[in-house]
Amino acid sequence: MKRSSRAYRRAISGPGLVLAALVVFAAAAGPPQSPSRKPLWHADHGDGTYRNPVLFADYSDPDAIRAGDDFYLTSSSFNCAPGLPILHSKDLVNWRIIGHVFQQQSPREVFCKPQHGNGVWAPALRYHNGEFFVVYGDPDYGIYAARAKNPAGPWSPPHLMRAGKGLIDPCPFWDDDGKAYLVHAWARSRAGINSVLTMHRMEPDASRLLDDGVAVFDGRANHPTIEGPKLYKRSGYYYIFAPAGGVTSGWQTVLRAKNILGPYEDRIVMDQGKTAINGPHQGAWVELASGEHWFIHFQDRGAYGRVTHLQPMKWVNDWPVIGEDPDGDGKGQPVLAFTKPSVGGTPAPAAPATSDEFSAALGLQWQWHANFEDSWFSLTARRGWLRLAAVPVPAEAKSLWGVPNLLLQKFPAPEFTVTARLDAGRLAEGEKSGLLIMGMDYSYVAVERSEGRTILRRMDVKDAPSGAAEAQQGESLAVAREVYLRVQVREGAVCSFSYGSDGVKFTEIGAAFQARAGRWIGAKVGLFALAPRGPASSPKARGHADYDWFRVE
Image (cartoon, rainbow, N blue to C red; front, side, top):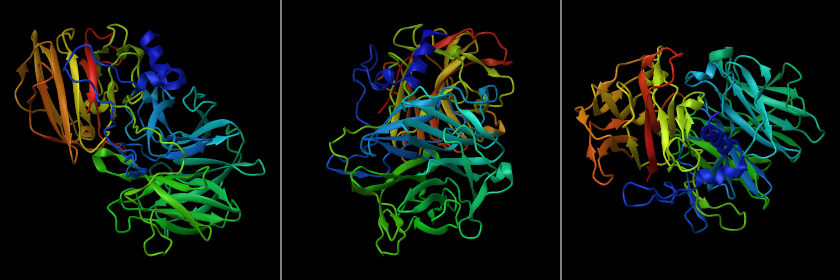
């Protein structure tokens, strides 16, 4: 294993190098301005209040917990690796990525190819008896569990605690008497049913389920597509928080019962109301040491993905009311701004990392579109640079949709600009590398070696899953081996690509591109390096591309 790969894995799973991945270093070359340390999206107003969303990024299906004075959050990662990000906060408003549960998704050989929309669905994060647990459903394989003493890692390899098709959105629960349970939903696409929640007895160590389960709630009549259950206990009641109605226009349902197996009463405790926050959906109840109650949920924002909101929560007659309730009917609506949680102290404004100077280890914000190979990248071959090997396009890939070695990260704000400094001097004939916006449609600007020349091209694809052909935008341009690539994302996820020779002056190339979400994930931005199409067993890539830095501002 290369030293760069070891560093990458330590940064993903070990607490010791987490800060190295978050620090922004000054560049040795490039435009005179230094990278900004400010988060692109400022949720914390700095005056004791915050605005929503607290995370303007695609942290889909968030689950969050408090452990002592710290808060942790995880989210769905689907086909991307490393997977199951772990975020940390001191106040539920300012968050940083501290690690991932796994680097390679199981079964490894299956996820070596992009499996768009498959993989990790709606995980649950819990802290029990001094250990952290993450449990998630893979709709094709079953329910997995992993555990760790330190949420930054290392985590145990996810083990399959129950095999089966369509078992999704599991949540474990440990009762006061020491017995353990797990509730989950169903995916109609695999199991033929949905809108039903099933409860199982579970080994207390989360190693396996002990029975075939009991259906504890049927939402088909009043709560269609009920899913994402999270199980809690308070004042003698068992509560299941579970969204229903669909991610774009649904609502937040809460069930309660005196017996964990039911029967459960149901109530809608939050919907869109008179706000612009569509389908407030799926999340976590967090109780503070101060006695305050808060709820984290997502909102589907199309190309931006499922962004994370934080709502105040109160209890009225043993029912939660989430957000604000102007008419007092017990059904809340989301707030756009509010007083921050009472945690003591004033944590500094923070957000997940975006820019990367490639100085020590790959930042924790990066994910590949499939399980990665050590040979795809290096941070030691040229110190201070990221080297991307030009990997042959898989023979079966119809477009970049089928290419695994795409190094990408989430959109971090409504508007932002990405600039990357590329040295393409070691690309071989027919190889290319560039800056990419990836989703169901995609677009990129890339440098290619063609007939002995270094050519800049801008390419678009509509409906990438269908294998539609790439269409060139603008002319092919001869450029020097070193070039600056840029994409500006404006409100509505409208993207304009440009290039330059000095990092100061840029020239647009091609028409504006409308970004589009991927399958269950938002659009992403990042880098790639490719060689001409070949079989999966193709020899090591002949050339490579070097990136000095990747800056988001």
